[in-house]
Amino acid sequence: MEEHEYAELGLVAGLEIHQQLNTKHKLFCKCPTVFRDPEEHVKSFSRSLHATMSEMGEIDRAALEESQTGKKFRYLSFESTCLVEEDEEPPGNLNKEALEIALEVALLLGMEPVDQIQIMRKLVIDGSNTSGFQRTALIARGGQIETEEGVVRLGELMLEEESAKRIEEQKGEVIYSLDRIGIPLVEISTLPDIKTPKQARNVAAKIGMLLRSTGKVKRGIGTIRQDINISINSGARVELKGVQNLDDIEKIIQIEIDRQKNLIEIKERLGSKEVEIKPSMEVTEVFKETGSEVIQKEVDRGGIVVALPMKGFQGVLGEMIAPDRRLGTELSDYAKKYGAGGIFHTDELPNYGIMQEEVDEIRRRIGIQNESAFVIVAAEKKVANEAIVSVADRAEGCLEKVPEETRGVKEDGTSRYLRPLPGEARMYPETDVFPVEVETAGIRVVETLEKRAERYNKDLGIGEDLSKQMAYSERMPLFEKAIDTGIKPTLAIEILENKYTELRREGVQVGNVSDENFEEIFQLITEKKLMREGIADVLKLISAKKFATVNEALEKMGLVVVKEEGVRKIIEKVVKANEEKIKMEGKGSFSALMGECMVELRGKTKGSVVSSILQQEIEKRL
Image (tube, rainbow, N blue to C red):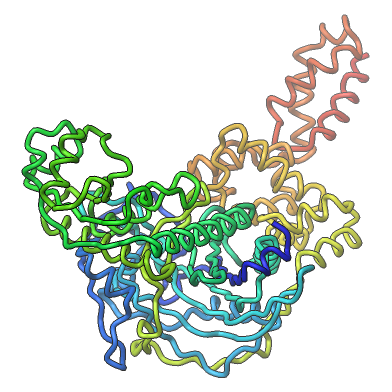
C-alpha cells in the first residue's frame, strides 16, 4: 500500500519498546541478572492471583478478566533467585546502576527527566508476577525521533521490573520461571504519530540503535520486545504484544489492518441480517456415541458439551479475517482464555468426527432452523459454561464494533486475543519503596553507534566496514575494553568476532564465556602471559565450564608462557634428536621440525619466535 492509502484508512500507530538492561543486580534485590535453564530449579511453589481495587475503588477490567479465568500458577525458583522474587520479602531500594542507565537513555533521546521518582504498582494478574503487580516508575517525558516520513514524538520512559518467563501450561496450571523476573527494564513509548508500517519499523530500529549505543543493554532473543498500538477508521485501538523481530513489524501491522477491515465488513454484513444470539444449552446427550475423539475425551472424564445458537451467523463464522484465521478462530481464542480447548462451529461441520446426524440433532434440541449457526464447547462443566459465555459476548460484539483489546503476536505475524485493554485503575503507589530524587549531574553523555563507527574509522584506522561491524556488534563494550587494555584493534576483532564466530560454528558454547573472562584474556595478553596461539584453547575450556578463570585454565593446560631461554632449550632438544634428518634434508627439514617444536610450545610463545630460533639452530648444524 502507498502512504496516501494508509492516510485514507486513518492508520494511527504508536510503539512501546521494552529493553532489558545489562546490570549486575536486579531492580529491587541483589540477585544476579542471569538466565537459567528450568531444569536447574531448586524448588517450586504455587499461587492463585486475584484482582484488587484501585485507590478510587475501581477494578481494572483486564485484571478482572484474568482473575475470573481461575488459573493457578506454579513458579520455579533457583539458587540465583531470592524471597523478593517469590513475594515473600519486601523489595529493596531502587537499583542505582539501572537508574543511571535509564537516565543515560533519557538524555540520549532528548527526554526531560522528572524531579522525583515514585515507584508504582501496575496490576498484572496473568501470573507473570508473583505479587499480582509489576513495579514501574516514570523516569522522563518528551523527546522525539526524526524519520524520513516525519517526526515521531516520544511519550514516556519507564523503568520497571521484567516479568517471570512463561515456560508452559498444563491442566489449568501455568508454569513460570523466576530467573527473569526483576531484571531492570526500560519501556519507551511513542505518541500515536506513526502513519505507515515502514515508519513504525524505522522508529523501532532507531530507538533500538540508540539503546545499544549505551553498551549497557542485554542482547539476544527476548531481551528487547516491541508492542504496537494500532487503529484505523471505524476500527479500534488494539495493542499487539511481543514483537521480537524488527523485520516483522511491517507485516504484523498490515495483517492487523486487514483483520480490522474484515471485522468491519462482517459487522456491516451482520447488520443487514436478522441476528439473534440465544442462551446456551447443554447437549452432552447428543454425543454419547460420538466419533469425535476430542469430545469423547471430555465426556469420558466428566465434562459436558454446551451449544450456543447464533442466528444470522451462518456462513460468517468461516470468513477469513487474517491468514489462516477465521472469525471462528477469533471466537475460539475467547473460549481458550477460560481453559477450553477451543470451539466447533457449523461452518466447519460435519468434520472432526462430528457427524451430520449430530449436527441436526443439536439444531433440533436448541430450536434453530437448518440455516442457522451454532457453536459448541466441550470441557469440564465450569470451564465450558464460562467459555461459552465469553464466546457469546464476543459474538455480540461483532454487531457493534471492533473490540479494543490486547493481542499476542504469533510467529506467522497473526495475533490472538489475550485480554481487554487495561485502564487507569490498574496503577497505584508502591508503599514498600521510598521515592528517589533525580540528579542528572555526572550522568554519562552517550555516543551514538553512528558516531562511534566514525570514530573507530578515524582513530583506529580499521576501515569503514570493520568500524561499523564493531560499533554495532553486541560485543562492542568488550572491544572498547580491549582497546583500553592495550590490545591492538585487529587482534581484538579477531578474538571477539572472527574467533568467536568460528568457535560457535564448531558447536562450542562460547556464550558461556563471561565479559570478565574476556577482560582477563585481554589483561594476560598485554602482560605477555597468554599467547595468541593459546586463545582458542582457553575459550574452549571456559566455554565447557571446566575452569572459572582464564589463569586457572592456563595452569591446567600448561600454557604458562615460556621465556626465550626456555624456548631455545626446547628447540635445541628437538634439533639434537633430529641431527641425521637435518644432515640429509638440510633446510628442507625445517617444516617437520617446526611442527615438533610447536607441539611443545603452542600457546606458550609466539610462533615467530620459534621459527626464528629454529632456523638459527638448523643453520648451526649445517
